[in-house]
Length: 367
Image (cartoon, rainbow, N blue to C red):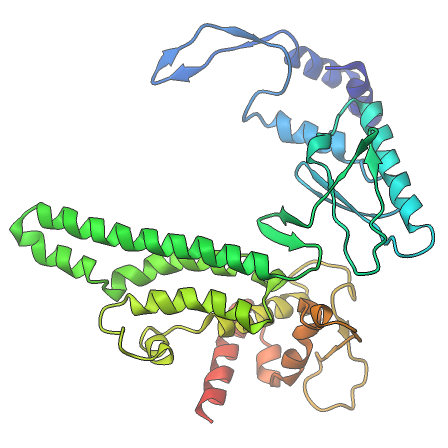
């Protein structure tokens, strides 16, 4: 262990004996691999923490815990990813971003924890962004128009078309794989004997009892992963996602000639658009009821006027100038949430809210 890293452990009030034990444990260490019960020869490990040990995540959290100290911009940390966000279309914004990058450099040099500069990128958001050039370790950061963050594609124009195309593409491939799996299973069962031939033909004919669990487990998660963040609002993007479920429902035996809505009714399913509405309300319920632990008022602002009609948990919408902001999660859910009846929003648990929401929508659909 390098000297400065030991000093950092001691600065966090760790006993010097513990620090020395960690240093010795990580120094002059030998390990061997085991494959099918056969052991390799011992080899000297010159650096790093043993794979799978508890010490690895503990040390990592200790070393990066103070990376955001002194930085003026908003810092987002997740595992080994660090993001700095600054507003640069105001006086002093560019210099503040430059200073924050300089502080990251000093932190890296002090604790001898280097960044992979080749993976560091800058994304310019907003039409008034001056698109300045930024450096770290004397290397100009590459400008990216799109970047994947925790599995979601973020575009510099904040539109979601790329994410919709990717989600639909992945789901479509999984749907095709599911179809091939069913066909292969049918052939294998048929080849096992004449007595299993009817079972093979039943599986290859897309029985709903087999196809729908595969669809829900393998396909739909691609269409709904983190969708509260990137939910599409353009019709072309909505159609791209819905087309995958249309194709899946057509694969079910006996439903191909029916309309899409009739197929959904027969399968007791919602359209993806209705599922997104339901998901939005479930997440809103969690924020309003404090199930998601966030600072009060940081996500939604409650209406203070008690004379308005409706329930007592009404939310206050904000002003916006663009469609992107209009369709952002915290804005698009306000009117729908405020229109819900009292018995829905005052549910005690998430399960009760889901049941009350479903009953409410069923009543509306009958009107």
